[in-house]
Structures are given as C-alpha cells and as structure tokens.
Length: 247
Image (cartoon, rainbow, N blue to C red; front, side, top):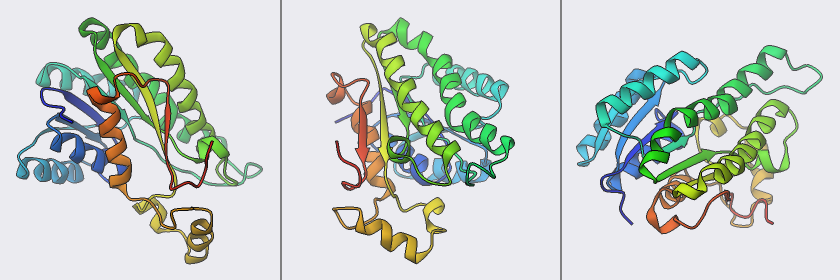
C-alpha cells in the first residue's frame, strides 16, 4: 500500500489521532500538510516526519475561523501543488448535561467539529473533481452512532459528520472521489487520559477486545481508506472501537 506522489491535508495534526494519521500517511509516501492551532507542536510533528525520511509542511490553522481555513488551503495548494487526501480530524469537547449546556458551548463544538469539515471539503473538492481522484476522510466517533450523556453537542456534531460523509460520497463518486468516515471508540489520547479509573474500567467491560484503542489503530484505518486499495469503498463508516458497538 503506497501513497507515493499523493498530498494529504490533515486538520488537528498537532497531537493525538491527527498526529498519528499524519505520521502514518507520510510513512506510506504522502507529502503531508500539517494543520492545527499550535505551531510549536506542529513543528515537532514535521521534524518527526522529516527525520524518518518523509515530507511535511506546517500550516497554522484554527478550523473555527472560516477565513483561516481559506487562507491555509490556498497556501497549501500554492506550496504543494495539489491536495489529494483530506482528513477532517480537528475536534473539541465542551461536555455538559443538555439542561445546563450554554449556547456558546453548543456553537463552539458544532463549528469546530462539523462546520469546519464542510468548509474544508469545499476548499479541495473542485481540484479533486478536475483531477478525477480524491479521498475525503472524516473522523467521527462511536458517540455519533450511539449517543453519550453529557455530550449532546459532541454527539450531534459527530452524527452530522456521518450524514455529511454520505452526502458528499453521493455528490462526487462519479469522478473517482471517495468520502468515508472513521468512527473511533475509546482511544488512548490526551482527551481520554483525564477519565477516571472507574469510568475506564466500566468502559472496558463493554469492549469485547478488552482494551482501549490506540491512535495507530485509527491511523492505520485512515491510511487504508486513503489508498487505492479502498477505491471501491465510499459513504462508509469504518468503526474502530474494539467491538464496543456492532451492526
């Protein structure tokens, strides 16, 4: 499986799942545009990729800001010539029971997790249509499939990504562009490290494989969907959850 000659743009690439996806895509031969808010962390990822013989460029980006999205993609296109693969990974949480949830927390999560994906897709789809090849991969969540108490905003944004994925897949499929989603379950990241031991143990009881996932579990799935080997898969939600949710 090779991505040699491809250019990938990864949002939220400074840490966690996004970082792992960027490193994996680079190891498969893609030139990777690393995008996130934290320039220092992005530079670290770029150095890691370059040290391993890969290619990467850094683009500072807050996906909640539409003008920054337009500027970052314009810069990436200018420097790298094209974007073949888009990984919409950037996401935040603002957890609270719905009766206490502030409108600002609802808007922040929807804008960052869902609206940004739509805006990023708009920036790349024209060139993908012209070259008649493209891979759009949206990182959703098991909680977008089954819901989660205290995460009405997050679950809604991730469920929205699934609908967006299927709609885009239907719009662009005739030009050999695929659009798929990857739905991680409980993954060992900075976000989940804050969970209590009791919560983690209860979660493990619902995971048939008996462990939390790793960022590499997710990155491997993303790399597969980005490859030619996945050319006949589109509009699909690939669950990477250890069996936590089936069907």
